Length: 266
Image (cartoon, rainbow, N blue to C red):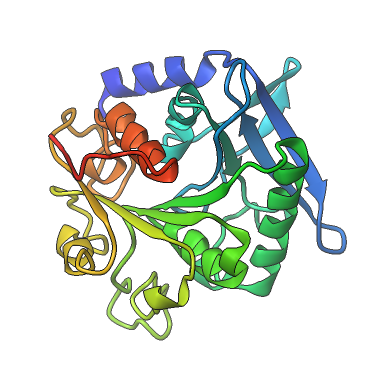
């Protein structure tokens, strides 16, 4: 990572954000599930976005000096305030207490993960009644969004897959994470939105895979941005929509609210 990018990232992540709360819920026997709640400042929210970070999903949520803190450069984590700016509640999901080393794809597709996320959604629905809930994943977080979305059926208003992991990792996919390489997207009954950067350089998240699905699902294609400050599969690159966060989130929210949205972000 470039030194300047690191300094800027540390400054952004240390800034206090209004209406943020660390929520910890008891879930499976002896396990807790935490999420970071970022709500719009004033007025009733128009939607709820449950956000699944990539990688292992362990974003190190914690309380320090009486405030919620998070350590992650992930696209959705650093863009949570953009969702709030457009009137949407952002709920960033951390790895549960029994998976603090990270969530693999098997866990993201499991009944235990589904149970944990159901509790988060129930808590959000209690706080914000009659507000539509959307699942938004990025990179490996799309495995969570897709599998939970399939099992939730009409219990969610939509599923958004950004920089999705369309290909299996490694030469032996039966022994390594599969991403969404074998997933039946038609099994998600809620509306699905695809979002992808045209120059995503990560080998398992090719833009062409998203484009091939565009005859069945709406696709927002993103171009340009800031010079990469990380490797191609890491967050501070085209894979993480670096420099295009605000515009990308704005169009995602427009789609959520059934407003006209751009299919191309230049």
